[in-house]
Image (cartoon, rainbow, N blue to C red; front, side, top):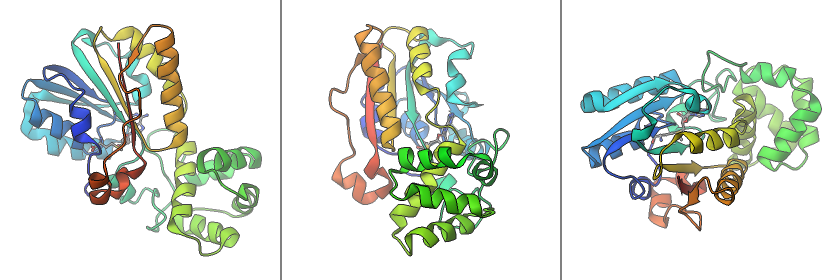
Length: 279
Ligand SMILES: C[S@@+](CC[C@H](N)C(=O)[O-])C[C@H]1O[C@@H](n2cnc3c(N)ncnc32)[C@H](O)[C@@H]1O
């Protein structure tokens, strides 16, 4: 499934037209393609943790030649990269999962029967079915409460621990044992919570923002698009703390949300929140 980049016009309005732009979550290259096409003097460093997505991006961005350089990397390791940081005008974090990944056979979707893996990078960590086996009951309850805001999290965690879950279908059946034939929205939230746990998505973001604020030059912009309240809270609080310490200046006093038209055309955009800060 083709991924539609979210709030691309709003993002472009924060990008100066010349210099190096880092796309920290390139996915299949939607935002990079749009920005390189809009701004002919822009160059992009395109990062993603998922090699398959980067391969798709490589094909999509081929027409820009050397203006797009692709790197397989976890963005939390970005501050450790030796780089021409002075030339970087903006870094974009469009967090979470792409439609391309959702329609893959990596176990991200409750609508496709496949092994329950859910790793962005299958060269590290453990697949979700091992994660669910090894995690303690109480940690699993916490994941469902914190990341899915779930009622009866204890019952779901108990049933998961009692079963040998291997596939998306096994997890869907277990959810239905507890909640009955519920709406897709509940399944999506539960799958998202497991994915956040498997990839440790909320860990290390604060530290990364703080290190990047030290490295980049005056005027560089950090742009965040989040899709989960836990992610947004971390970004919001980190930017506020950095501003108090005089390290960054917040440019979006109010969070930016997609317009009605965009949400109608791309329902995936409905939970998006954008925050921007400048050094
Ligand atoms: C919402 S998608 C980005 C879509 C992209 N902006 C586009 O328009 O095509 C999020 C991407 O971030 C990647 N990602 C998630 N966590 C990451 C991390 N810690 N480091 C690098 N990439 C990550 C995922 O693999 C996924 O491809």
